[in-house]
Structure formats: C-alpha cells, structure tokens
Image (cartoon, rainbow, N blue to C red; front, side):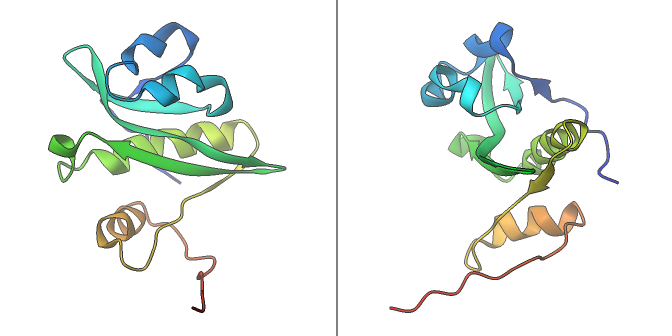
Length: 123
C-alpha cells in the first residue's frame, strides 16, 4: 500500500495556473497528462508528477522539478499521490528509472516499488 502523502496538491483544470510559471507544457496539455500532482511553493508548482504514457490498463509516471527543489525529498510525495490516484482509476501505475539515475532509483526504493523489467540497449 502506498502511503497517503501530505503537502501535495492535485492539479486539475481549476489549478492549472499553478503550473504555468515552471511547467508551461504540462499546463497547456494537462488533459493528456492527468492525473497530475504537485508540491506548490509561493503560488507555483515546483515539483510535479504526471502521467506521461497512458495505455490500456496502465499509466506511467513522469517527474519534473525545479533544480533548486531537487534533493529535498519531494519526489516520493508526488509519485505516491499520483500512484494512489492512478490505482483509484483502476489502472496500474508504472514508474521507470534508468540504471544511471540513482536519485530516481532511490525514489522507487523509498516507496517500496517492485522491479518489473530492465531496459537493455545495444549500440
């Protein structure tokens, strides 16, 4: 069970203005990326988790942050809020991280996520 996060705002059409300063693409295309959750500071979203791929039965998380807000522990908050909502919608939440992205892999560990696959590429 993913814990209920505190300090996270659900971003729907009525809250889209919170995204405009730092995440204008997400603000303009919110309907394609719901659900979306954010940590808000001084009236603007500074850390966001949104759906980046929606397929039949699954949704994949996309996490973005203002550089000065990285490393403060907000990623697990927004990912947990997003994943809970995705599950409530009857979908399976997917979170991917590259092997080189230790911060993203740490988020997965902190949330107790299960490794379901490894991406392999040949060059």
